[in-house]
Image (cartoon, rainbow, N blue to C red):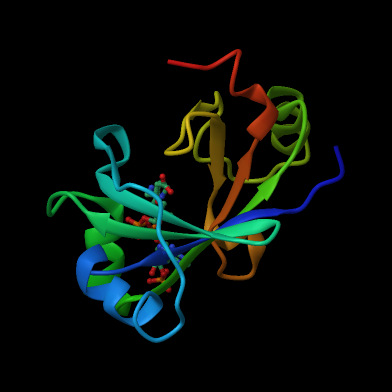
Length: 140
Ligand code: CMX
């Protein structure tokens, strides 16, 4: 499939509190909140046409999102691009010398495989690559 923006991750202190803005003022609705302990976050997706916002609330102080908020405040945390053949894509990016944070895909909040590139690879933006069509294959 053609690549697109699967979602934009937004770091927030509290999903409930953030929803007072998104729901009450922008009239957007979030899907059910899901915990992803492997990533140290609780997330809620807000569907938006062909893409989504992903509200990320830290589960504990070690969470990358807790560290992000402490250092930089609430705000845009990452952009996730969809791709097919994520494993092959990662192998190629590694060959090209990019700093990959997950050499093997891990399971993301949406249930499909994801991997992050270090923000220094992309002008200060944390980039996630994800393979929505890998949902059935799954990863541990
Ligand atoms: N976007 C842009 N820059 C970021 C960033 C982000 N999300 N997080 C950290 N940085 C910056 C830091 O501020 C730091 O900047 P300076 O060098 O100017 O001080 C720089 O990146 C390097 O940071 P670092 O010390 O190498 O690493 P950190 O301990 O800050 O960790 C990162 C950053 C990206 C490696 C780590 O957060 C990580 O591994 N993230 C991937 C996993 C993740 O974020 N999971 C949560 C979301 C899960 C989900 O969506 O389901």
